[in-house]
Image (cartoon, rainbow, N blue to C red; front, side, top):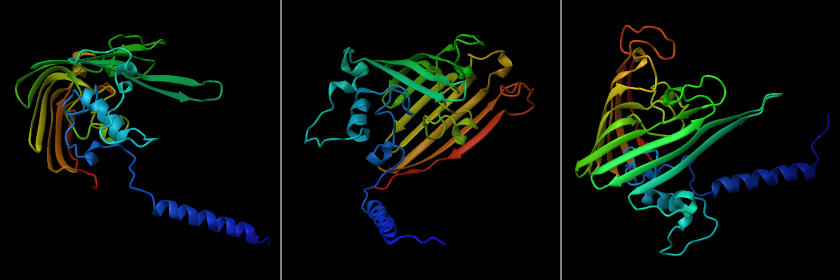
Amino acid sequence: MPTLRLPAALAALVVCIAAGLAVAWSPPAAAYPAMIRHGYTGCGECHTDPSGGGVLTEYGRGQGVILLASKYTEHGEGWEPPKSKDFLFGAIPLPEQLALQADLRAMLIPEPGNTRLIAMQNDLRGSVDAGIFHANASIGWVSEGGNEAWITRNTGTGGNLVSRQHWIGVEPVEDLLIRAGRMDLPFGIRSEEHILFARSYTSTDTNRSQQTGLDAVWQVGKVRAEVMGIAGNFQVSPDSYRERGYSALVGWGPASNLEVGLSSKLTHAATDVATRDARLGPSELAALVAPRFEPL
């Protein structure tokens, strides 16, 4: 039986020791850049949607560079993010009341004789903040999928136009925003991973599961809450496919790096959109307790 020669054994030992030292001396790291580790238990500081996702505010763009971007050089005290953080890398200055953002997402599937490039998201998003009045909308194109967000009905090749969000809102008093339109549902931790079980099973992903309705968002101190009355997704038809009900969440942040939240969603539709079968009871009943914690 062949034996391992001494030089090879020493090399393997050195590699193992080096790997162990690298792991032991590494600084803390995380796979998902949750802002809660930086003391943000809410989302409205960095996003125009108070529950997160979508268009970034000017402050959010800056914090994205300061806290989340890879740093290849050390920045001195008082350093400010460059203009390249802005829309189109700062090439077109925008008025203070307007925020624009382009979101691109694609997937290449190499198959023998049938390589597929899927344009999953090519969205232009915009937000207007005019005093107590707010508006938000998106327009984009997908090569396939995203059926529930279609605004065209091309069932063959060529893709479709989509609009994932479009809403208007008013802020009658400080810390209270009332909105009407097509919005992401207030449920759980809003993330872009739309294929996660917690997002797909509850139909609360940000890719295509938005609904039209009336929404109220309230945040005071350590508590934030949002409730939405769901009128249905008017970008699908016939009416029997449209779910109606409510979705709501409440979150409490007792510490700067800890938030505990409770979400609830109850909807009903006459026909199941996925199976096309008639329903006899509630279409979806979901509840979620979602604590978030990041060590200091």
